[in-house]
Amino acid sequence: MRLLTKFFISLISLLGNNYGYEQNLALEKHAIMSSRAHFWSKPELANDGDVSQDEVKCTQTLTNATQAWWQVDLSGASILYIHITYAKNSADTMAGFSLYISDDDINFRNGHLCYNHNDSTLPELYMEINCKVHGRFLTFYNERLPDVKYPDGYSATAIIQLCEITVTGCERGRGGFTCTPCSQKCREGICHIMTAKCLECYDGYYGIDCDKVCSNYTYGYNCTERCGKCSNDVLCDHVNGTCAEGCLPGWIEPFCNSSCPTGFYGYKCATSCSGGCRKAGQCDPVDGRCIAGCIAGWKGDRCTESTDPSSLVEEDTNTAAIAIGVVVGVIVIIIAVIVIIVFIRFIQRSDSRIIAREKK
Image (cartoon, rainbow, N blue to C red; front, top):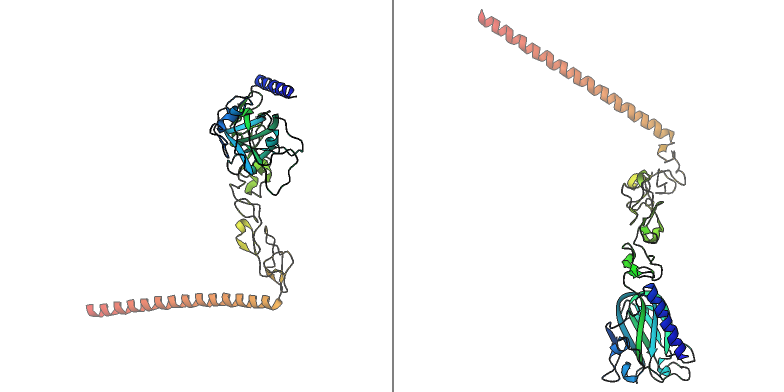
C-alpha cells in the first residue's frame, strides 16, 4: 500500500512538471516549530528535500505537550497539492492532525483549513492533500486536550514527527498550468492556480483578467452596486460611485442614492417644505408637493396658496394702501421741487432789481 501511495505521488509530481507547476514551494523556506525533542530535531528537517523516514532525518516535538505545531513561511503561494511524509511507525502521533494555510503566522487557525484527520482509524504515513488556496504560512497542527476523548490508538500527548512536507503549485502572483504571471489588475496579484483567472478584482472592474470597467450604471466590488440619481444622466464613478456633476433634484451628494432629509426638497435639498403641508415637513423631495395634502386655509400642490377670503381682502387693501402712499409721496416731492424753483427765481429777480437801482 505504501509503495502504491509513493508511486501515485510520484506520478502526480511528474504530471505537475509537464504542466509547469513548481514541485516544492516549501523547499528550504524558513520553518519553525513549537518545541524540539532533540538537539538535532531542527524544523528545517521537514522541508529539506529528504523524504527519508529515518528518525534522525525527521523533526520531532517534545512528547509531553497538549498542543504541537510545525510551520513554514511560503512567502505567498498559490497551492495545488500538499504532500506529507511522516515518521515510520508513528501513525498514532499523526492521528487527528490538521493542516492550515494562512496569512497570519500566530493566529493560523483562523486561516483556511485544508485538511483535518478525524477518523477513528489511523492515517497513512504518506498523504497527498488537495488544497487549492492562496496563502503565506502552512501549519501542521495537532493536539491532545485533557477534556477530550480521543479514539483508541491515538497517542496520549500531542507529538509531531514530520519527515517532509512538499507543496505543489505556483509562486505568489502566478497561476495556470504553466504558472504564468497573473494579470496586474487582479486584486493583490492573486489568480486561480489552475485557470489563471483573477480570484478577485479591484473595485470598479470585472472579467477574467479584471480588465473590464463597470458599466450599465454599476460600480464597486464586482460591479454589484447601482449608481444613484446623477445629474444630467451621467454615469457615476465606476470605482466609488460618486456623481461628478452632482445629483438630480431631491437627492443628496455625493452618491445621490439617498433622498432629501425630511422637511427639504429640490436641487441640493436647499428648499424647505411649505408650512401649509398637512403633515409638517413632509413633502416630495423632488418637487416639494405636500404628500398628505394641505392644512385648512391653504391649497395648491405645495400648499402655498391661501383659501381665506378675508386674508385676500386684507392683502388687496394693504396693496392699495401701499400704492396710494407711493403716489402721495411722488406728488409731495414734485410740489417741493416746484416751490424751490420758484423761490430761486424770485431771489434772482430781486438781486437783479437791486443791481439796476445801484447803477442809476
